[in-house]
Image 1 (cartoon, rainbow, N blue to C red):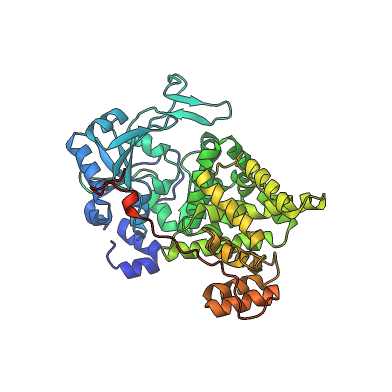
Image 2: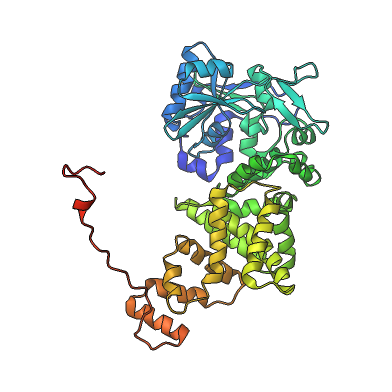
Length: 471
């Protein structure tokens, strides 16, 4: 970590100036390499994953260039603990695969290598070069709109650096001598807390529209300002996101909202017109229902809090909150046409999910629990007799209960039901009986809790042979 760590955290800009000296403003067309030797920075190998270091050293010892690159270097310089470790090298995917038996080559659009150590995955990429018109389409291909369909042209580290998206991500930690290579004035932008695209922003966004989402994510996560030239085209080019496969956008949504700054991310996405490209029906519902935006905001606040507390967060609940306003809007319209409430919500759920799948995929392992949480919203008001106990024992009850509290806090429904379920969960048998009696009008002190049938003990001799083995 940096010397004078406490002072650095208080005034990171001044600390970076002290470490690296003043620089000229970035943004010129051909950034020059600046090598920061080990004795001029305090980024230590102790900050890095042991497995990432293993990959670096094996590549280096095999005669290859090997660098930690991107977010882990950026975050280390900002005084943050790095979490994801990406490696750039001059070794080809096939050469990397030969060196690491615990690896596999993935991707067709961008071929990368994942080296797996248990649950940790180290991502290794080959230096990328500049795609040209004379390249074989098997290696490089662009659409008529400029979208990169395939980008597997290998190049030098300099070409690789200038192909990176933001200047603060074009920082390379060299395992050979522990120096930091700054190819695009990234340190200067770190000091200014500025997010700046390398190259012409419009061209870069057309190459890969997801860069607009990354700009928002990094601005929210790092509390950086987006440089004017970088932010100007976003609003106009936001519809380019419709070209991106839904599966890829699902992964980007998780990164956006599970980074610990979900609320700020949501605000920026709407400011730049990107949210409507990801969740069009939700944006429409926000305009029509006053409670929709507060519900989503509270869900995101809760998500940020759980991440800070290192508690689990499920995409099923997150997507459930995001899509609920649009789904309810559909259900209300169906009910106004004469459809009963339960079939109306089931139909609306299917329609909403189908429309959302055109923009971001939702794996069934998340969409099915999400629908269960939604369905339970219709069961929670029904508390007479055995129903309260049956609902309480449902696998998704706790998530559905939290969702109910969310709806009440947003003003979608009147408060009261949430307090009843809070008391019912926390009460003993007598209190639960009293609460049910108050709801159903049955005499206090009686309970309709389902009685557990006594299991008859099986005669094991009829199921096993004389030697005790199962037959």
